[in-house]
Image (tube, rainbow, N blue to C red; front, side):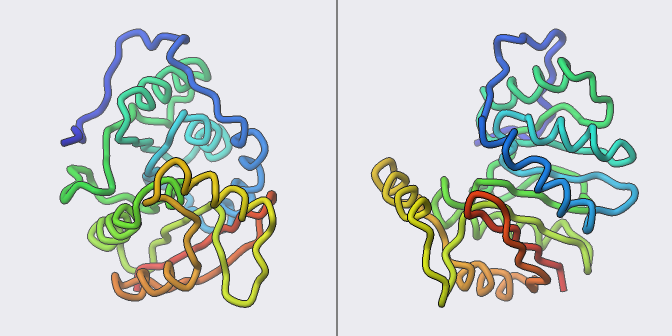
Length: 212
C-alpha cells in the first residue's frame, strides 16, 4: 500500500531527475488550457506526476497557486523532489505517494485535480479510482482536468495513436487508449459532467470535467 505522507528528502540528488521528452513538447499547450480553468488561489493536486517536470513548470507559470505533485512510484517521487530543488520553485510541495487504485487518499481537498498521460498507461480501474477520489475531494463546480490520447466516436483515429495503442497492448493488455464516450459515462456515474473537449498537439486531447 502506498504512503500518502510527503516524500521528504533533505538533499534531493540531481541523479534522481528523470526526463520525459513529451513534457517539453506539450507543457505550453497545457498551460494555455489551464490558464482558463485554474482559480487565482488554492492548491492544485496533480495525480501521476511522473518525472515532476510538469508540476515544476506549472509552479513557475502560476506562482500564486500551490501545486501538490503525487505519484505511486517512489522513483518518480524522488525525481519530482529533485526537479523541484533544481528549479527552486517554492510553490511546489514535496511529492506524496498516491495511487488511484487505493481505497483512501489521506489528503486535504484540493481546488483542482490534474491528471496528465495516466489513463492510457494504467488499468481501467485506475480511471475509476481517479473519478471516485475526485468525487470525494472536489467541491461542486471544481474541475478535473485530463490530458492524453483518446479515441472518439465518428473521428478516425490518427495512425500515430493506433500504433501507440498497439505498443501499449504489447506491454500490458490492461493498458490502452480510452474512448471519450467511456470517460464521459464514468464521469456521469461519479457526479461529473464534461465541460470541454479541446484538441491538443500530437493527436492528444484535453478533457475538462466539473463536479456537479
